[in-house]
Amino acid sequence: MLVIFAASVLLGVTGATYQYLATAKDRRAFSMPGQLVDVGGYEMHIDCAGQKSPTVVFDSGLGDSYVSWRKVQPQIAQFTRVCSYDRAGIGYSDSSPHHRSSKDIAEELHRLLQQAAVVPSYILVGHSMGGYDVRVFTSLYPSEVAGVVLVDASHPEQESRFPPAINDLKASDLRQEEFLAAIMPFGVPRILGFCGKDIEIRAAECNFHSALESVEELKAFSKSAMQTEATGSLGNLPLAVLSSDPSMPRPEIPEDLVKPTVDAWQQMQEELAHLSTRSVRVVAKNSGHYIQIDRPDVVIEAVHNMVEEIRAAR
Image (cartoon, rainbow, N blue to C red):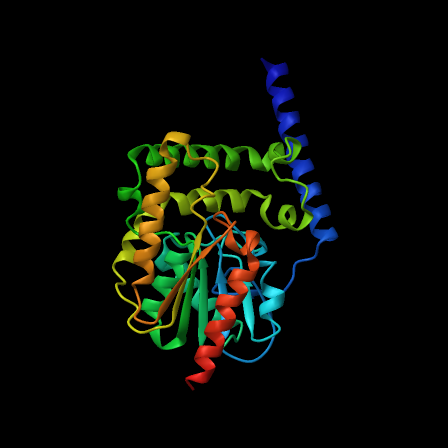
């Protein structure tokens, strides 16, 4: 038993050392863009580029870092100011002492923008769960938001309107994320190739605090949905709803659940477009859930059109 215990300790120390050195190597190979900003005893990462207003602010999907916007941020920076950031606990941002619901996330983002001197007005662009965050932000700080773009965004009622078996998949996702967080400090995901070959993604996301933040955001998902539902209408605020191609469902959905899930998703996407009297909806052909990666041109065009509309109305 002593031998087994000693071997286990040795393996754990070896794995933790490998994780630390490999992360350091990745971060030397790809330096963090942007800056770290103190938001009240902990630091958050933000990366801004471009000039002019309004300023576009990206909020990523659950567990995703700023990297998910790298195909669209440089192009948008050519015609206006644009910022991507890491939510607390994700990527280069420190973990937060606060809860991880969308209200907490929106308040943290507001402090980050203030401390980083990113002045309003904002066009908020939210992908997937980030759609909750930007809607809650808009309800908290309406005078600072000039427009909203929802990128295949979550709907507050999706958990009740998807086939019940989909919720079983969500429970499985939570267990997988908890397992990933448990083994991440020992370098196991890196050894098994789960972190991939992209150095920028590995440097930002292949770490314990990012894995743990994904767990916490999943646990808070239902609460975030309720907070978002309570925000109500966007009135006449400019709104663009970008939706994935119905013919490209998420690969993890079982075949017998694809049609009812896709039908429900498209209906809910249409309902999101009715949140404002000044809305447009675009179905991104040949794109899955990550439209900003599969069809970055669709996101760039939607943001450009909204920027021009807002400038013309001044």
